[in-house]
Length: 222
Image (cartoon, rainbow, N blue to C red; front, top):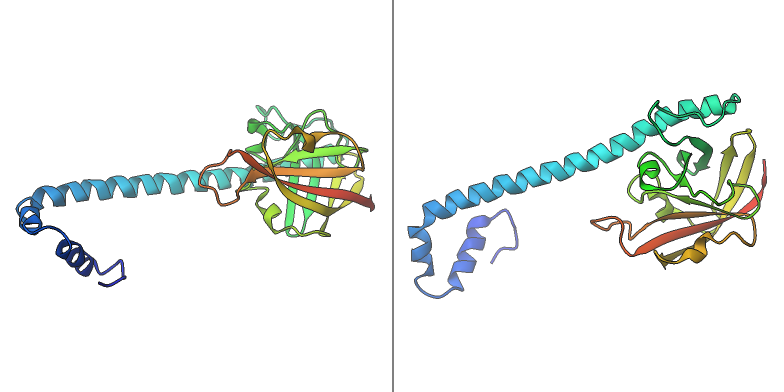
């Protein structure tokens, strides 16, 4: 039997040859109903696929557009304004700009679901990047933080704060932890960034029981 999924006649013949005698005749007699049902199922599957594709495209488009609007708010922040909202109804604002290999991302205040839909979010209660202690930033694995999977030990990136200062970091560790592991947010030890996203990266649904955590230690200011 052919393994080619497009040779449907060969596949159907192989299946029918393995079934009890009389099945093929019954199938022919009910062929009209089977054909109509197959057509309906095909339309449903295609519609579901189109909806899923549309949802995925919408999420990525929203993430990219938001970063452009947030960039404008960040320029105003660097000019001396405080807590500049990227759009009038926003309940967050940019607090830092992260530049990694091939990436420029604006970090928003707050790491809840509403904030990280538009960009990486800085967890309230942790210091800003470059300040003493552990600064925690969360982001979605399929948009802004997709690049985390490619980071290697020693890779460097910079973070700019609202006063214009730049802080350099180098990746020191990457690991998978349980989502209930609060140790990753503890504010102790060296000045560092803790970047958190969902795991695995290729999961069909986000929000599983595990998180991918990248730790980057401060290596000096520029």
